[in-house]
Length: 321
Ligand code: SD4
Image (cartoon, rainbow, N blue to C red; front, side, top):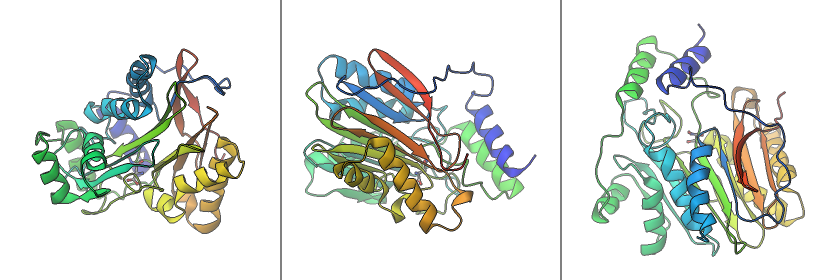
């Protein structure tokens, strides 16, 4: 078994997904323009996350509350090995988390290199709402969380630990296309206001101290309530280099559709990054009119879209076919 298959298989089996029934995949979503509320999020774990967000939006709640509550679902799910509790650890066996949130007034909050806290997204929201700062990191972020009533917990599940031990023993170099699956979520509420959230345990087996794109405003997430919102998943280093989510929002400001904007951002990565074939990056976008779009570097990126009374998985178009 090559190292790519090893990682895929061990991750899937540990997540209980290998035997799970296949989710129905529709090819193209119907247009969502004008049909508020809408929630869009990355990967299959976006389905239960969207469902939680839609409960809030359906009751007339804000996009901000919806995205926070939505991404808390995979954060607390031990079977999701790329977000929060159950996330795969860094090289030394520590689960370190990155998250950020942004609202319709350009307020934002972020935490990075945070350990022991199940819901980094809610800590990021607290940073946004109760401090004059935007980003808190590491020990300082942990202390802030504890001071604000968050509980210190062990986030390394037995199965994530076993995957890490196996990885160490075989001395495998993780394939950069397999060790991600951040949840990024964008929502528009019934008033037409946009917000977004992004939360992850980052690249599995990363160097201790490494921070990815997910807590970086403009890279993993960006929201401009006049224009639209975007978020990212995949190799964070590539996303940071092009300020991916900000770039997509600016492209939409200049008239591109969400899908075109995501494609142009991926093409920018291809142009600038010689070894792009070794990576995966996926972008999602949602504009003020309620149109959505997605595009990825490699095949296999999927997203969950909840609108018009449905909540379904769709495959993203990709640069590498
Ligand atoms: C990162 N974008 O840290 C994230 C990776 C990811 O699950 O998708 N994580 O680079």
